[in-house]
Amino acid sequence: MTAEQNLQSLGIVLPEPPAAVGAYVTWTRTGNLLITSGQLPWQNKTMMWPGRLGEQVNLEEGYQAARLAAINGIAQFKAATGDLERIGHIVRVEGYVHCAPGFRDHPKVLDGASDLIVAVFKGRGKHVRIALGIPDMPLNACVQISFWAEIRD
Image 1 (spheres, rainbow, N blue to C red):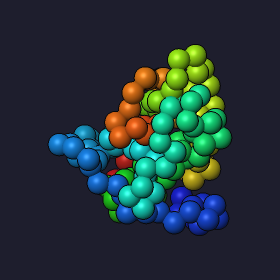
Image 2: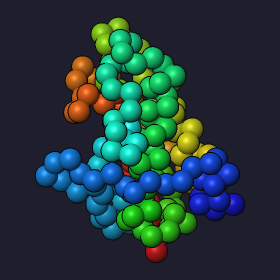
Image 3: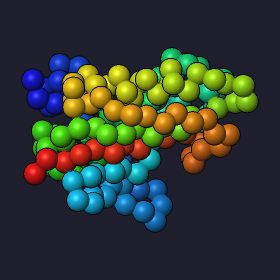
Image 4: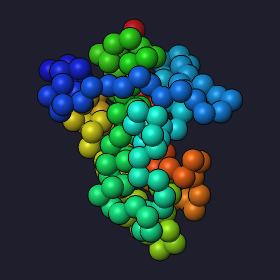
């Protein structure tokens, strides 16, 4: 099955890729490498699950936020390539979790993005990952995730 078919089987309709909220681009390509800017859990221009994990946001909400950020990342891939089948391999996922002191479940939160990426891209979606906790986040987002992907021409 193609990535688009996998999205459809998961009941996911890709949104318009979120616009930049500052003086940067939402994705860039160098050679066969496509890198997205940090993707936030935007849904219809609304920040979902604002706040810190371990305070205002629970683990399940964080997982869903990471999943939503990944959907936005896939929308950026589609905008950059025109065809998700041009994604040869998801190389790296960088995840930042806005969390309270003592919160240690960063990997469980970011599994929301990783699980979705693998479900959509199958073997092409297996990636390396960074999971970091930070005390503050732009726009009070609970997660921010950036993606590195290899492009096939």
